[in-house]
Structures are given as structure tokens and as C-alpha cells.
Image (cartoon, rainbow, N blue to C red; front, side, top):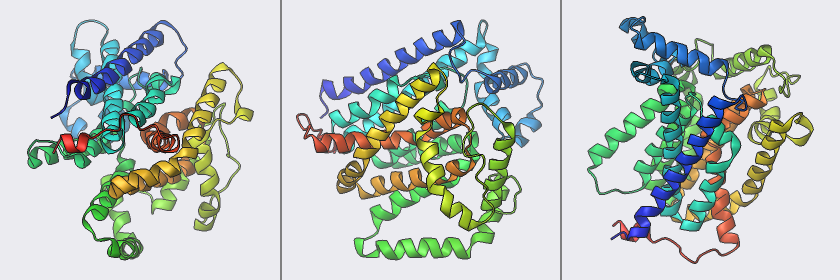
Length: 390
């Protein structure tokens, strides 16, 4: 049986995160301090208004599912049916989704490690300015994060509900996250494939499974490219590499004050292999001190320093988590590495980088918090939630 504290702690985390984000919504609407409030949010608001007004045919909505502006505009359009400040209602909804994602992460880490590690994980997620700013505007990132973390939580934590109901909720969550950013679907697939494989395979078959996976992927590359194009992931490019080069070129042409590594030219797979680690580092930790020009930049530099500290402890954290659930630890790591690699290649702007990396940067905070807890023996109230829920 779970005691009262076990139930109230996650609610406190959810409430605290939501209150902080409501403050972010207030600041966003009263000032011009939120860097995430801009052209994208205006486009989403206009699209939602058009849909709610009945100016967009249903056939057009169906055909455009998976496209950025129409899809997210459809998700938030019900708020434009309400009287009053529709965008503020949508901002509050997004703030709740961001808080719910943090709630999921807290439950996940508490279950597989400890209350201390869970709290240490969510504290930066609750209070870091970039996280609050992102969850205070009508961008889709909070919904993607909430859907992803909820699906993982349902998948790895045994709840006393029917498996069929859990499966339906997982499928709905992954479908939602994929519709909102279809290019992330292969990353989600890798996460769940890894968790399933390492959960059900015997240890002696692990290396064989890895070899079979990579060999099959190479042999079926043309088929995979066709499937990805059919799903709209590659946007009718010739292959994954061509898509990445096209996306990188498009973002370089967009310009911007905080662009980086724009002089790096990628033309061959060898170029990608050589520069991918550097680009991944920039994607994960930019901006660096020499890139800062104003107060907001320096705040983001401070956040990057915090993430670097968590990264130092993340290796030990992964080892500790793998002892408790190898499938989850490896699945999260595999997804994080693929995510950093792909987005590192196409990302050239600090603002976009800070926003997009939050889909998986929570993994670093989680592993780092576990590693820190292990390092300094913070084991006063290690959770026994697994035994309580059995």
C-alpha cells in the first residue's frame, strides 16, 4: 500500500511546476521578456483562430495532419471557441502540459531510484528560465514532452490497470507526439525497441541483437527511406543524409544573431561522422560564454553550466539505473544519443537549439541526479515503490 506521502509528493511537484509556469504566462503577456514568444506563436494562434472559425475545410485539416502549423493549430483551436482571451487559455493549457511532463519524470525516477534523485531531477526542470519560457507560450514542445514522458511512464511502471488500456494510452501518446513533430518518430521507435529488446532477451543475445539491428537497418535502407518518405519524415528527400543536409542548409539561410558553426560544410557521410560529435556538443550545451551578448544569453549560459554539471554525474547515473532496469537506462541513452546526433547536425541557432533540446535533455538531468545521489550516498529515504505497487 502507498502511504499518504507517496501520493502527495507528486501532486506537490505538479502544483509547484504549474504555479511557476502560470507566473511565466503572466510575465509573457505583460512584458516582452520571453524569447519564445514570436512569429511561430503568432502563426499557431492565427491557424487556431481560422480553424475555430470554420474557415478551414475538414479535408484540408486531414490532409495537413503532421504539418507543423495546421496540426498544432488544430490541437489548440478549441480554446478559440471560448469567449475571452483565447491565447491565454491556450497558454495555461500548455503550462499544464509542461507541468504534467515534469510530474511524469518525477514518478519515473522515484520509482526506479529514489525520492532524492527524483527531486534533484525536477528542480531544474521546474525553475530553469528556458523551460518556464517554453511552457508559457503556445508552442508544441510541452505537448510533445508530456506525451513522450507519459508513454514511457506507462510502459515501464506497472500500474494496476488493464494492459489493453495501458497499450491504448501509450499508442495515443506516441501518436500525438509524432503528429506534432513527425521527424522524431524514429527516435521514439528506437527508445521503445531498445526497452522491449533488453527486457525480454537473455543477456547472451544482446550483442547478437545489436548486430542484427544494424545489419538489417543497412540492408533495408532503401525500404526505410521509402517508409520515412511515405510518413512525411524525409519531406521527399532522397535519403536521411540528404534530408539532414537540406534541413541544415535551410536553417543557415534563415540567418539569426545567435547562429553557430555555419562555416562547417557537410557533403559526405565522412563529414558527418567527423563533425557530428562537435555539433552534438553545441546542440546540447550552447550557448558557451564567448557566444553571449546580453542578459538573456548569460542566463542561458548559466543553464548550460548546470547541464554540464549534471552530465558529469550522468555516467554513474546510467550505471546505477541500468542495475535496476537495463532496458529503460539503455533505451533512454539510445534515444538521447540519436536525438543529439540528428538535431546537432541540423541545428545552427542557439534559440532554436535551447527550445528543441528540451525534448530529451531531461534524460541528462535524470541520469545526473541519480549519479549525484549515488556519489554522495543520499539514501535516507530510498523508495520502495516497486514493492508497494506489486
